[in-house]
Length: 201
Image (cartoon, rainbow, N blue to C red; front, side):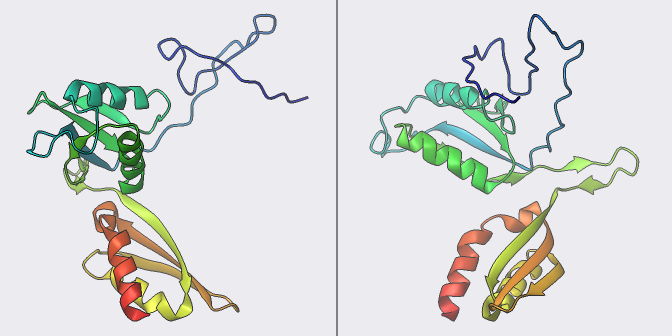
Protein backbone atom coordinates (compact mmCIF):
# COMPACT_ATOMS: atom_id res chain seq x y z
CA UNK A 1 0.00 0.00 0.00
CA UNK A 2 1.30 3.44 -0.94
CA UNK A 3 0.94 6.37 1.41
CA UNK A 4 1.50 10.07 0.86
CA UNK A 5 3.12 12.03 3.66
CA UNK A 6 4.48 15.50 4.29
CA UNK A 7 7.98 15.78 5.74
CA UNK A 8 9.46 18.88 7.33
CA UNK A 9 13.16 19.10 6.64
CA UNK A 10 16.27 21.01 7.57
CA UNK A 11 17.93 22.20 4.33
CA UNK A 12 21.34 21.77 5.95
CA UNK A 13 20.82 18.07 6.69
CA UNK A 14 18.40 16.88 4.01
CA UNK A 15 18.63 17.56 0.29
CA UNK A 16 16.47 16.75 -2.72
CA UNK A 17 17.34 13.22 -3.85
CA UNK A 18 18.18 11.86 -0.38
CA UNK A 19 16.84 8.41 0.50
CA UNK A 20 14.47 8.19 3.50
CA UNK A 21 14.09 4.84 5.22
CA UNK A 22 12.46 3.38 8.31
CA UNK A 23 14.64 2.65 11.33
CA UNK A 24 12.79 -0.66 11.69
CA UNK A 25 13.42 -1.77 8.11
CA UNK A 26 16.40 0.15 6.84
CA UNK A 27 17.48 0.20 3.21
CA UNK A 28 21.12 -0.97 3.15
CA UNK A 29 22.16 1.33 0.32
CA UNK A 30 20.89 4.73 -0.72
CA UNK A 31 18.95 4.87 -3.97
CA UNK A 32 21.01 6.49 -6.70
CA UNK A 33 19.79 9.93 -7.71
CA UNK A 34 19.27 10.17 -11.49
CA UNK A 35 22.00 12.33 -13.02
CA UNK A 36 20.94 15.86 -13.84
CA UNK A 37 21.61 17.44 -17.19
CA UNK A 38 24.31 20.11 -16.93
CA UNK A 39 23.34 23.79 -17.13
CA UNK A 40 23.25 25.38 -20.56
CA UNK A 41 23.58 29.06 -19.71
CA UNK A 42 24.67 31.50 -17.02
CA UNK A 43 23.71 35.02 -15.91
CA UNK A 44 25.17 37.53 -13.51
CA UNK A 45 22.90 38.86 -10.76
CA UNK A 46 23.81 42.00 -8.86
CA UNK A 47 22.40 44.95 -6.97
CA UNK A 48 20.89 47.78 -8.99
CA UNK A 49 23.46 50.57 -8.66
CA UNK A 50 21.87 52.91 -11.19
CA UNK A 51 20.28 56.31 -10.54
CA UNK A 52 16.80 54.75 -10.30
CA UNK A 53 17.79 52.17 -7.69
CA UNK A 54 15.16 51.46 -5.05
CA UNK A 55 12.13 52.47 -7.10
CA UNK A 56 10.96 49.00 -8.14
CA UNK A 57 11.79 47.00 -5.03
CA UNK A 58 12.58 47.24 -1.34
CA UNK A 59 15.37 44.64 -1.14
CA UNK A 60 18.34 46.08 -3.02
CA UNK A 61 21.51 44.93 -1.22
CA UNK A 62 23.68 42.52 -3.22
CA UNK A 63 24.16 40.34 -0.12
CA UNK A 64 20.39 39.89 0.21
CA UNK A 65 20.07 39.05 -3.48
CA UNK A 66 22.87 36.49 -3.16
CA UNK A 67 21.32 34.91 -0.07
CA UNK A 68 17.99 34.55 -1.88
CA UNK A 69 19.70 32.87 -4.85
CA UNK A 70 21.56 30.45 -2.58
CA UNK A 71 18.32 29.55 -0.80
CA UNK A 72 16.72 28.80 -4.17
CA UNK A 73 19.20 25.97 -4.76
CA UNK A 74 17.80 24.07 -1.76
CA UNK A 75 14.67 23.19 -3.75
CA UNK A 76 15.71 23.83 -7.34
CA UNK A 77 18.36 21.18 -7.91
CA UNK A 78 18.95 22.19 -11.54
CA UNK A 79 20.12 25.65 -10.47
CA UNK A 80 23.71 26.36 -9.42
CA UNK A 81 25.00 29.52 -7.77
CA UNK A 82 28.60 30.69 -7.50
CA UNK A 83 30.38 33.85 -6.45
CA UNK A 84 31.64 35.99 -9.32
CA UNK A 85 35.44 36.05 -9.30
CA UNK A 86 35.65 39.24 -11.35
CA UNK A 87 33.17 41.23 -9.23
CA UNK A 88 32.55 40.36 -5.59
CA UNK A 89 29.23 42.23 -5.67
CA UNK A 90 27.77 39.91 -8.31
CA UNK A 91 26.59 36.30 -8.26
CA UNK A 92 26.75 33.82 -11.13
CA UNK A 93 23.62 31.73 -11.68
CA UNK A 94 23.77 28.63 -13.89
CA UNK A 95 20.50 27.28 -15.26
CA UNK A 96 18.83 25.15 -17.90
CA UNK A 97 17.35 27.90 -20.03
CA UNK A 98 15.83 31.35 -20.35
CA UNK A 99 12.46 30.17 -19.01
CA UNK A 100 13.93 28.85 -15.78
CA UNK A 101 15.91 32.04 -15.16
CA UNK A 102 12.93 34.18 -16.13
CA UNK A 103 10.64 32.44 -13.63
CA UNK A 104 13.21 32.92 -10.87
CA UNK A 105 13.61 36.62 -11.68
CA UNK A 106 9.84 37.16 -11.68
CA UNK A 107 9.48 35.38 -8.32
CA UNK A 108 12.20 37.52 -6.78
CA UNK A 109 10.70 40.74 -8.11
CA UNK A 110 7.31 39.83 -6.63
CA UNK A 111 9.06 39.26 -3.31
CA UNK A 112 10.43 42.81 -3.43
CA UNK A 113 13.94 42.19 -4.75
CA UNK A 114 15.45 44.72 -7.12
CA UNK A 115 18.49 43.66 -9.12
CA UNK A 116 20.27 43.81 -12.43
CA UNK A 117 20.76 40.73 -14.60
CA UNK A 118 23.18 40.41 -17.49
CA UNK A 119 22.11 38.82 -20.78
CA UNK A 120 22.49 35.01 -20.66
CA UNK A 121 25.72 33.43 -21.84
CA UNK A 122 25.79 29.90 -23.29
CA UNK A 123 28.09 27.49 -21.46
CA UNK A 124 30.55 25.68 -23.72
CA UNK A 125 33.04 22.92 -22.99
CA UNK A 126 36.04 21.30 -24.67
CA UNK A 127 36.12 17.68 -25.86
CA UNK A 128 38.89 15.91 -23.89
CA UNK A 129 39.89 13.74 -26.86
CA UNK A 130 39.67 16.07 -29.85
CA UNK A 131 40.02 19.46 -28.19
CA UNK A 132 37.03 20.75 -30.13
CA UNK A 133 34.69 23.31 -28.61
CA UNK A 134 31.32 21.82 -27.66
CA UNK A 135 28.04 23.64 -27.13
CA UNK A 136 24.70 22.39 -25.79
CA UNK A 137 21.94 21.36 -28.21
CA UNK A 138 18.25 21.04 -27.44
CA UNK A 139 15.18 19.40 -28.92
CA UNK A 140 12.38 21.86 -29.59
CA UNK A 141 8.77 20.86 -30.30
CA UNK A 142 6.40 23.51 -31.63
CA UNK A 143 2.64 22.95 -32.02
CA UNK A 144 1.17 25.54 -34.36
CA UNK A 145 -1.60 26.06 -36.91
CA UNK A 146 -0.52 24.58 -40.24
CA UNK A 147 -0.70 27.97 -41.96
CA UNK A 148 2.04 29.28 -39.66
CA UNK A 149 4.38 26.27 -39.90
CA UNK A 150 6.47 27.94 -42.61
CA UNK A 151 7.03 30.96 -40.38
CA UNK A 152 8.24 28.75 -37.53
CA UNK A 153 10.56 26.78 -39.81
CA UNK A 154 12.10 29.95 -41.23
CA UNK A 155 12.55 31.42 -37.76
CA UNK A 156 14.40 28.39 -36.37
CA UNK A 157 16.40 27.17 -39.36
CA UNK A 158 17.91 30.45 -40.53
CA UNK A 159 20.46 32.30 -38.45
CA UNK A 160 19.46 30.27 -35.39
CA UNK A 161 20.98 27.14 -36.98
CA UNK A 162 18.10 24.80 -36.15
CA UNK A 163 17.42 21.60 -38.12
CA UNK A 164 13.88 20.38 -38.79
CA UNK A 165 13.86 16.66 -37.99
CA UNK A 166 10.13 15.92 -38.06
CA UNK A 167 6.91 17.57 -39.22
CA UNK A 168 3.46 16.05 -38.67
CA UNK A 169 0.14 17.56 -39.80
CA UNK A 170 -3.22 16.45 -38.41
CA UNK A 171 -6.78 16.65 -39.69
CA UNK A 172 -7.61 19.61 -37.43
CA UNK A 173 -5.22 21.93 -39.25
CA UNK A 174 -2.46 21.70 -36.65
CA UNK A 175 1.20 20.93 -37.22
CA UNK A 176 3.81 19.55 -34.83
CA UNK A 177 7.36 20.56 -35.72
CA UNK A 178 10.40 19.02 -34.08
CA UNK A 179 13.81 20.69 -34.30
CA UNK A 180 17.34 20.14 -33.08
CA UNK A 181 18.98 23.47 -32.35
CA UNK A 182 21.95 24.85 -30.42
CA UNK A 183 20.93 26.46 -27.14
CA UNK A 184 22.32 29.81 -28.31
CA UNK A 185 19.81 29.70 -31.16
CA UNK A 186 16.93 29.77 -28.68
CA UNK A 187 17.99 32.96 -26.92
CA UNK A 188 15.29 35.53 -27.54
CA UNK A 189 13.33 33.18 -29.78
CA UNK A 190 9.99 33.54 -27.99
CA UNK A 191 9.47 37.28 -28.55
CA UNK A 192 10.75 37.03 -32.13
CA UNK A 193 8.33 34.23 -33.02
CA UNK A 194 5.43 36.07 -31.41
CA UNK A 195 6.23 39.18 -33.44
CA UNK A 196 6.45 37.20 -36.69
CA UNK A 197 3.13 35.49 -36.09
CA UNK A 198 1.41 38.76 -35.21
CA UNK A 199 2.70 40.31 -38.44
CA UNK A 200 1.30 37.39 -40.42
CA UNK A 201 -2.18 37.60 -38.88
